[in-house]
Image (tube, rainbow, N blue to C red; front, side, top):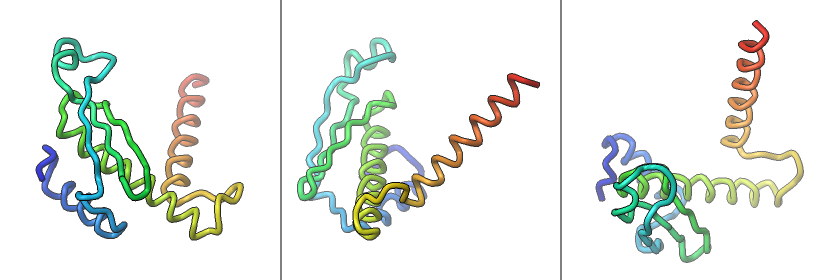
Length: 124
């Protein structure tokens, strides 16, 4: 399956899906029209992807890109992230307050760094 990304990115996604036990047969995929900016392109094409993992019931809606293949790639990537978070939470014994997955910790760290930079640039 080709998502319009580099071979390396596609191979990484496939390896991640295999590691999580996700198979293409378990997905239900719907294509709908995107909302928001994009002009005539998004008004004419069904580039928004709604991806559902049937066994777990997780559903992801992706419409960031104007192209359908990129949205399909991003939806699968996001679904992998959600599955990893669920697995991490269950491994930690549920959703304990203050316990975050490694990906969530990294995202929070980057968010704090950006806030710091913004404060410095405003004052300086």
